[in-house]
Image 1 (cartoon, rainbow, N blue to C red):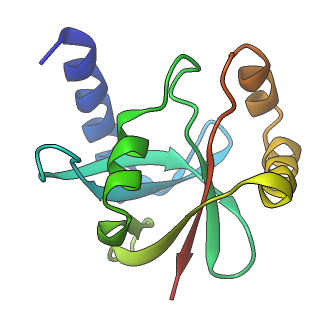
Image 2 (image 1 turned 90 degrees about the horizontal axis):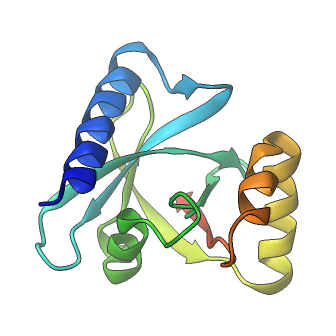
Length: 139
């Protein structure tokens, strides 16, 4: 495992522990813990991510990954969407339906996201790729 991957995983562990201990809000954003399965390893993975409400039972997440490429959690999620779960502070992880948004649905969701957090528009403007937007819906 490379140093940057090790550092990212260690940071994820610390942030996940903080969300469970103190709550799911950092830097003015709501956070959740996304549970996925490694696309090659089959091992469980947990990723702390910012989220944005999209109705009563849906949350939007963005695969920004620092701008250059899609993050590993995104590849895992797309490879095994049927294993995805979401954990919020103080709650057990619950299964979610995963939808990668396209076209007008993505545009509408993107507007919601950048209205809530304009920093994502700045991040997107610095990247050559269009960030995937995913809707996670609980039953």
